[in-house]
Image (tube, rainbow, N blue to C red):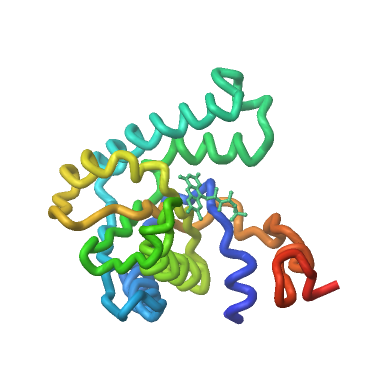
Length: 212
Ligand SMILES: Cc1cc2nc3c(=O)[nH]c(=O)nc-3n(C[C@H](O)[C@H](O)[C@H](O)COP(=O)(O)O)c2cc1C
């Protein structure tokens, strides 16, 4: 599959088929994902593939807590999801059925191998994540190239202590994302919603369009 096709059709999958993803597909995706860059090539990432039904149910139960409060925060409260925009309805279905994804892959990282260079700026530090998320996206792309869908999530990261106990994650290793993985029940998206390239790329100084 052409890399541009993979990049433009790796959407966040909300509906999975129950069929398991073969071990070889996982191995190929994890193998390819490693080639993303990380600061100092310190390779902080460790992965846990969760397929056990009981563990997935527990992860779903925890996930639902921040998800339902997020729903509340965007002002929909207990309103029936049938009346909500499709993206929200889909994300709610995803949350309620998270345990039915064939696998939930937990992206972990060894904290000591992250090298954030923006911690003294008095604002949110983001550089540490730069050694993690390119690899996670590579993983999603490599799955996509094999016809396997994914949904990168972070809402469960707030349950890191609980998740660490559940999955025996040692001290010093953090959780950065939980990626639901499986074959898509509704195919892959062909038209993901993104801002026009003309609006987001600048020429020399911020605000001057490079592309007209
Ligand atoms: C850092 C990050 C965190 C995300 N966390 C969640 C999440 O916790 N739950 C969720 O349903 N989707 C999550 N998403 C998926 C986004 O909602 C999704 O990428 C966005 O809505 C665009 O959807 P699309 O890629 O299918 O167009 C996350 C995406 C990113 C990049």
